[in-house]
Length: 177
Length: 343
Image: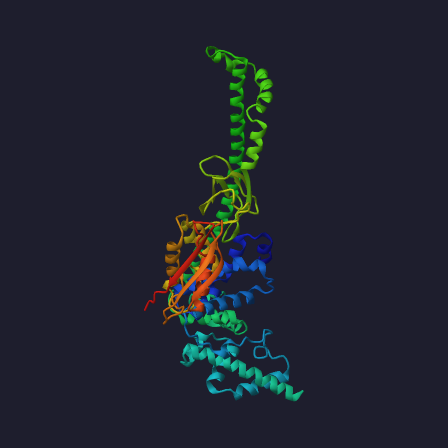
């Protein structure tokens, strides 16, 4: 679809592409601007900006490109308003794009062993959340109900737990090899 | 599961879990989910509103493209119309001259329309030469100034825009790249216009440049639909703090829309209105400088005589260079400005 737009320059083609991304872009803007009207305006501004810019860029991965363009736009809006932005550095470290699937599907025996061991090393809340999330396929909302933790706590338990698990497992496997 | 279902409230079970897992590997998705969770309200409603607005914008953009084509087509029809008009005009006098030379008494005129076309045609070529004598022709060629250029708006060149000599039916229109060329005489006024853009007039004198690149401003009615908020024009005096500088483009477009008198007094008002309020604050700043207003009304050759503050100097020269064109041209100007301190 992107190629189609670049070849024909048809606004409608790009519009359809952008329409599919509306929820993502809008959610992202909500996160940064914390205001529905501002997010709405930003989504439309980003559309106009991209319409102009896109033909001048060589965009290989539209998904990640749009992500960074949209995020930059929102940050710029905040900067213009001179608002102080609290950015959680940890949260914004972009994870390795190659999926870390060990937690979900350990392939070998030693991977499984490492996983079981590492889950045991996690703090209790992280452990519980991770187990529910990965082993029992519970959603955030499910876990909130099951454990009584707040939603954002559950999120950070899982995100941090995952990170801890990853480094623990990788370390352990490296030691053995 | 789609993100849309998720924010609609379907946050339970395996499907939701799958989306959340995906989000852990996709910061875009993760941050979007965070955003929807952080801000309350009916997000689905907001998304529908966005979809509708997007549709509307796309439609109007497409329409604008279509309008251009209609504009081009209309111009072609217009030119053809002009052509036939000239054809008719050129022939009428010829018939009358024919009457004179053959010395047919006026009472017999009613029979003239019945005269066979062969006679009329035979006479026209010979008559065509008589009305315009050689020196006259040369004079006309001298009087005619071929003016060329490009018409653009903030989106780029404007195809199918029309260039007309005010008060006449003479005109031309721009090609696909926005280029036009028209023959005009000193004293004519060219009117540049296109659908959705504000028309602009430029007077032609013998000294006018032969290349006029015109930038047309969006019509306000269109602006409501197309304005990109990030680039919104802000009155500089409304902006507190030292955050923005008025862009050259903004000022340039202001310049072209003004037609009324613009001289020292008007510039001072313009300067007061557009200058940054933060320059040289806390001091009694003043400046005097000389410059020359060229034939297009653009101030050049700045010569600062006295200035108490560099910022003021820069600001003043920038606004002179990119501000409205002066209506009193080709003269030297000396300008003194004392800053009013607003606090």
